[in-house]
Length: 408
Image (cartoon, rainbow, N blue to C red; front, side):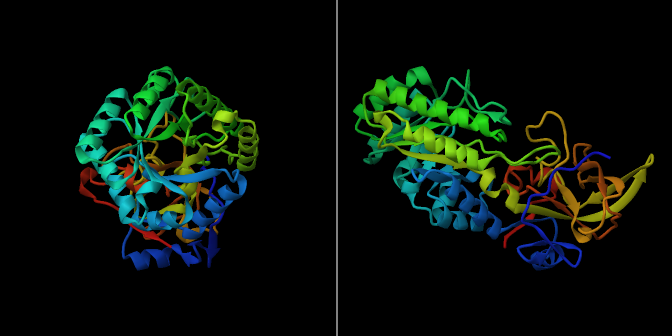
């Protein structure tokens, strides 16, 4: 048997069945009226946000990177819990505003912003994280046309990356941000234009579990922010230190040491030079806030044997859970945490593969894992489904359509 990923803490069992927020999986499916279904636990999201505020220095704000999960009720909950939102398109900007997030709490990053997107952000009053000199020129021209002073920051492409991260966003040639050596001249031009100078966005990577690697990246980001500010010779009002906090998905993964990261960041902030003494800092997190709070529930529609191997065929699959099938950035496919929700208390002594309903061999939610005997009608739960699930998967592939979603 191939091992399965670790099931996150915070889930319970009622009468042998998986329970989420005090309700059984079958009851939640009955309320939704169908499977597949994404269920997001508000209590687990609140718990994670509370842990972060307890661990991080008081000087550090918490931003939600809504690309992780843009579901409306999740955004409304996050608006109550965090200090700011980070969006990556005009569509996400509109979703955040519709969820009641004030524009001054929103920053907009991402390469290739269209002119109409720049204008939308300027009209709303959101901060634009500029990704190039050309984008700066277009943003300033847009502000002039609209008669509105734009709020502008610069996304910095640092000379370092986040070691051990699942996705490196800095160091070397990147489509993201402005190379560090070009930032001072660009910043001086932005400030001289009369725009509202909002500072830096420094994002080195994502999905790291090693606390030392995150600490090192944060220390380097602070040093870079100080050096660039000295060269610009202007106060730095705000600095987004990025995120990178990972969650355990696969067998052998261990949770990041949040306390160590928070303590080290506090020490580093105490030692910053004068040029950063009045800077506001934030960390930007997505999956770390919501990933472990989500479960994807899908129903077994067939049980079959082929050449001695047993397959449980479900009504969901990669069109909703691309990452769990190993097709979203992973090089070697490993099993996510997966369980038979309706037989949550039974031992996993049968080797089976859980496959989706799409006619492609890529549609495999669990490969040769150990599960209790399950049959047609049983519910399968895929954990760590709160981030990069519904909105990061090809829901229209083969015409099956999107999954249902609910926040409980």
